[in-house]
Amino acid sequence: MRNVIHFASDCKLTATLWLRSVCRCLVGRDMTDVSQFDYDLPEELVAVTPAERRDESRLLCMDRRTGVVSHGRFPDIAGLLRPGDVLVVNDARVIPARLAARRPTGGRVEALLVRPHGGQTGDAQDELTWVALLNAGGSLKAGEELALDGSTARLRLVEDRGEGCWVVRLAGEGVSLARVLDAGTMPLPPYIRKARKARGMAPDLPELDRERYQTVFACHPGAVAAPTAGLHFTAALLDRLRAGGVQVCALSLLVGPGTFRPVHAARVEDHVLEAEFYHLPAETAAAVAAALAERRRVVATGTTCCRVLEYVAGRGDWREHSGWTDLYIHPPFEFRVVGALLTNFHLPRSTLLMLVSAFAGRERVLAAYQEAIAHRYRFYSYGDAMLIH
Image 1 (cartoon, helix red, strand yellow):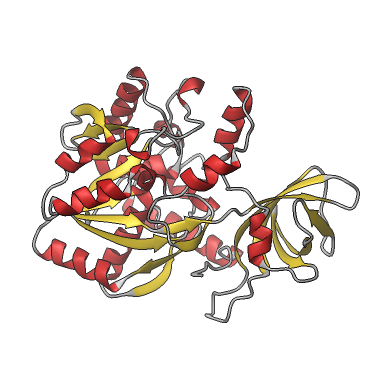
Image 2 (tube, rainbow, N blue to C red; image 1 turned 120 degrees about the vertical axis):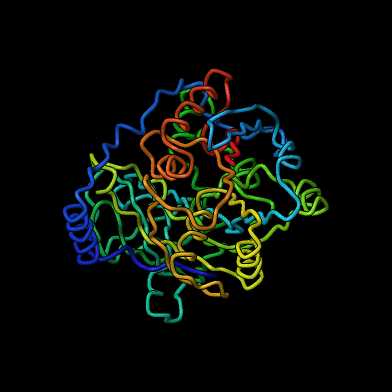
């Protein structure tokens, strides 16, 4: 499994914020208020389940130069992509990393396994020791052991890293990561589970979510959130694109919770994105480099692919490699690779909406969102799609 590092250290975080502050002072650039990326969404437009078929989602298409939008269905993308386009998808596989646990006192704890502990120095991974986010009603203490629902394994609390982040170890006779994950559920975004409850539904639909909160090309496990722009593709549709001259390539970004964490800073520039692990295969690196040299279009499937491609462009390293990216894309940003972006509709004030706004312009994007609301599009992870070209 391709794994991710620890959370960034306090020293690195402090240095990053200090450097950004100095740069702003030097160039005299005003900071951007996060409220500029806000909008109102009717609760009933939050998608709590996917479309019956993956490719039955709706597709809003927007010209990023003019802001003109058109409406269709997702299979229409076969006529919108061109021969010679390079379509890049994220083949990360989501693991059922959400665990229900119980304290010795009987108190309930929700645990999300975020990433294996270690790995920053390239050492061999220990699949039983993890960085996790814990949600409990009371104070947790190092050394405490939690019983896991549906498993004979226990979760031993090793180190408190603050703000609900812990180093934990899976314990018990014959324990293995695979057995623990068998008892886990897919780490759906909290707003889906909340909206399901509000509509009188069960918050978890295990059979549905294990299949549909996963792309058809997912093969590299380790993500704790799905690259949702890719959820709309079927194998047949991908074959149709290839037959039409579109080159389909993959990279891996193991999406962590930091990508979806709310922006609590008042100013856009003060937020810091957590690093995530990526792998760029040789075939994809060569395809993208050739497309750029020949002025063919590179189409990023989702903000995850966009971030990796633009990060690699900044490094100028179009060879096979793995690494970590904490690239935080917000206006203004100069895109060097991505010529079109396929994405879902994102939460207000989120880093994902900021990235899309950097690509197409905040005013045009928010106007397109209002158009989508007026036409009753379904929003967020299980919702409809948007092609910006």
